[in-house]
Image (cartoon, rainbow, N blue to C red; front, side):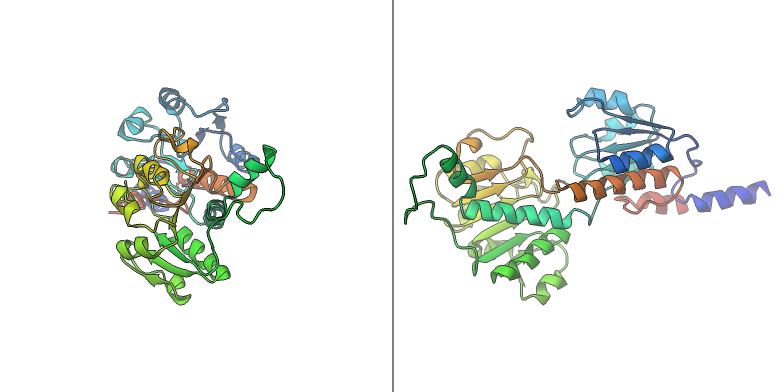
Length: 349
Ligand code: GLV
């Protein structure tokens, strides 16, 4: 009888032999939208939030998570093997982001720790922001705004702030996953030709709208706007470097709303300074929050502080998703968005 009920329990909690956490103790590494915090407070006994309005130092992060059951973390928190070993009671790290390059997922999987992310809910907001950057850099919106505010506007002039045409031009998308596809679909409104590169399959949605999957070389040579939507991993680190920038049109613009290290930022500063390409719109940087020397002095780049998903609605959905993922795991259930579903499969073997 006892054995049977143990087996039933195990099947109800497929990912681990551990029991459901009776008195969940959760740490949240940054203030998050209220509805998600309220949800966590209803479901857990202890919910502590980083009291500072800043990113925790790594040591502070380690101390804060040492005796927790679940952690809601952000892309600023490094969750490497050392972090996992310093927090042996943590069953789940719920990343408040779709990207999870801040986490050593293999190390977590080895230790039976669940990692979750927030896919889908931020697709549109991020694609919208990529378009905002495309418009801002093509039409020199920020430069022109600064000019006017500085009192230099003396009336309309035929040669003032000439930018690049968007309608009818060619958009090249690197990474045709959810966000890259959303970016490409929006291009139809501007009668653009869409080219894309993708490491895995074709995007049927983009193909259905006349987009063409091409090799990187063709994409770089043909595109007026190159927009990056790939995840950061060892294959994509410095995917766009000096050689790739040199292959782009001198009139082209580079947009990056994915992850900074996909672009060699030193090479990009040189390319922008020496008119190898015309401009760039960046929401992400190689060593965030730092920027490579010279970047902020350039007029032909629009730089934003990593706000791709920053709308009230989207951040609320992301927070609720991350909170739901934590509570599911601590309840012994499969969360909706596991990054390492192998953790469950291993336990079933
Ligand atoms: C933000 O950069 C994210 O990955 O969600």
